[in-house]
Image (cartoon, rainbow, N blue to C red):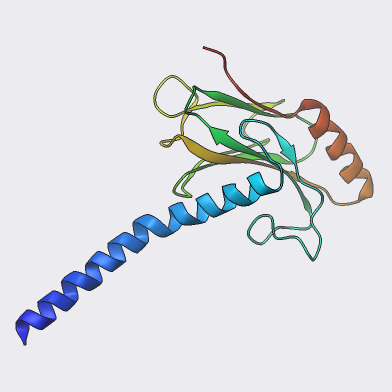
Length: 165
């Protein structure tokens, strides 16, 4: 009886450990595949349309936020992401391949544009800890006027590009 209980506990612990390691990576892989299917390429900023009741591009999207995303591919070197200052709330968040939120910076900490150089290893503002990930830029928009202004600024000033060696 004790042997069966020990085997059960070992199998359950193994399944739990595999799930804790695998499921976050599967979630990020699925998100990146959906972005790619919608035409979003790696290391290029993509401006997501305003959120409505049918939107599910991100988990629980907020209708008062305007999103821009960049799928990060650091396999050929660091990538620089910039969120242009627009005079309202803006944040830049970085997520590693296992869904860990590696960094989050907003306009309350930095004056002007928010810019981060991301690498998989040393030599950058942020070590992502993986070769792939996602950068999300969010802007708070409270009405049609701020929506139009935020959309113009992000299209003219946001950027995501690989840094040439």
